[in-house]
Structures are given as structure tokens and as C-alpha cells.
Amino acid sequence: PTLAEVAQVEERLLQDYIGRFMFSRSITYTIADPATGATASTITSTLHECLFPAQPTDSDLRLQRRLELLAAWLRPRHLEVPAALMEMPQVEESALLLRSLHAQCSPADMLAAIAGAFSGTTSA
Image 1 (spheres, one colour):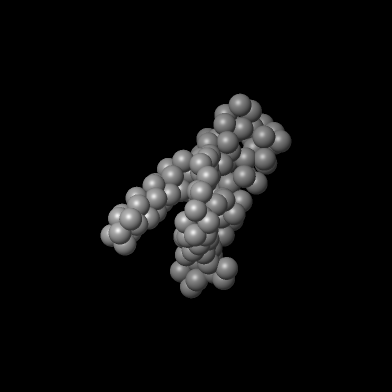
Image 2: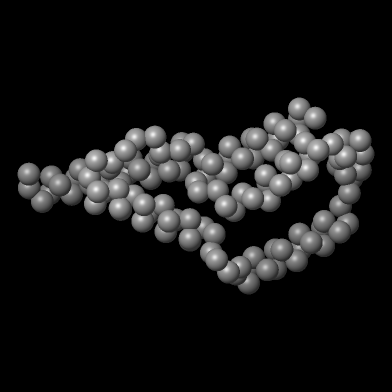
């Protein structure tokens, strides 16, 4: 194969990988070529590091402070949530799931965690 043909194959694999990363629960296929597998792994870790830096940014800190102020004021009654519901263990489990979103590896995994959190709360 020519260099152009190899580049086209690599580009298709990369597009497929990014599409699966963004829109599927998990990547269920294996990459036969170790170099392509290493590229896929690098892309995943780079995207995760860009989306979730190890240290909070100034913007993150400002948002955190505002959310803390809102949390200090907002109560379940403001959202018309029954007090009995807030005491159920499913609600605490759902809150823990939501607090761990930053640890998910892909947007699809985040959406699955959110769905799980709401499923747990609505089953309560």
C-alpha cells in the first residue's frame, strides 16, 4: 500500500474511534495494530486530561464557590421534593454517583452514570 492509502485507513480508524468514544458506552472492538491501539489510548487519555485537568482552573474555583453558596441556601422544599424522599438511601447513592462524574472515562459513561442516578432516585 502507498503512504496515502495507509493515511486514509488510519484517518478512518481515528474517526471511528473518536465516534465510539463520544457516543458509545464503551469501546467494544479491539484494534489489531499495536500502533493504532497506542494512538487510540493516547487520544482517550489526552481528551480526558483536557476535559478534567488535575488542578481546578480559576473558572472552576469561581463556579465551585457559587455552587457552594447556592447549596447553602437551596433546600429540597424549594424544588418541591418531599422530605421523606431525601431520607431514602437511593437518594444518597444517586448523589454519590453524580459527584463522581468527573472520574468517568467518556461522555457516554457520564451519561450512563447520570441515567443510573436518576433511575435510582425515581425508583425511590
